[in-house]
Length: 407
Image (cartoon, rainbow, N blue to C red):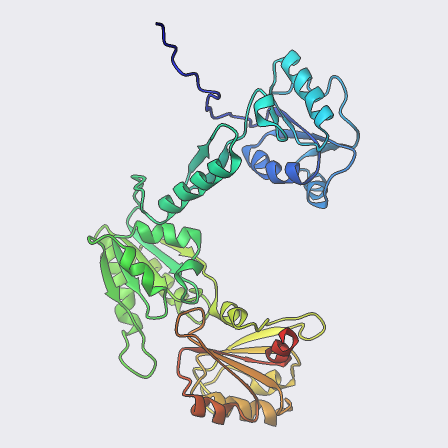
């Protein structure tokens, strides 16, 4: 008995489409999904379709693609290297595929993958790697495997052998929930030799680090023990100059009351290269998880983020509290729990209504989150009665009262 080797349905290959003519037939949501990666490849893309979605039209207006506003016709595949059939009309897609076969152009049929001469794998990017998965037309399976591989790479569960050069990455870790750190931030954290972490960073992620990683506590506990900024700066420079890749893991965004630029300056003076990875700022994310939108149509057309670390009655304050009181929009106060009575008094004295809604969110996005809802004239007393403590974000303005619309 003769046995035959199983034949794979498809052969995976990477196509260099830069500068080469690619034809996309159809301009609906399927084309809208496929076009961005083709644009990034540098292909000379021509879309043939009587109508397109607004997003596809915007690509044409921006010069990223050429749009032929008509139906497909014979000769459209002349000199093409690759064609995608993305219409909702099976007959049209079949006609395009037939012409592609005659002209020897590889053709993808979005409506029936096995009917084309090529298929598009489920793809994703990771730090210079392009991951592609084919599953014989089982799109959900290939997408799930792709997502699992990318997650494992980003979290360091699969070692990609790529090492970061000595230096510092200033990573904004987001408001506290470990799932709210950026993809890039998590990837760099997984490659760290040394991590200098703030108390307000996503501390759960520290448990995922390899045993060989040195973790330095740079916690700045309000009104308690605190590592001086100079000591943190020195540690960044010292470890980077020792040939280590150092991740400075901060809460929120490094440049929103995070002293991030002070650390960049210190590294620059020492000749240490720095990569800055922005983070999801607590000023907006924490209110969001407490159902407080910082802006809302017809309610607030402005939002101001202000530090409450120095109160209105302190001669060292850099904030014009009288000007803030005259604004009609949203005021987000960071680090202002113990100064909230003075802040409320200053805003009311400046003309802000005493019954302006206020929301105070303690340890937002974490398991310990607590939300206090009050008004400007009562919030100081309510804060004490509820035992609210730092860290907390305070939102002052009509948006803080919109929660009633959800009842």
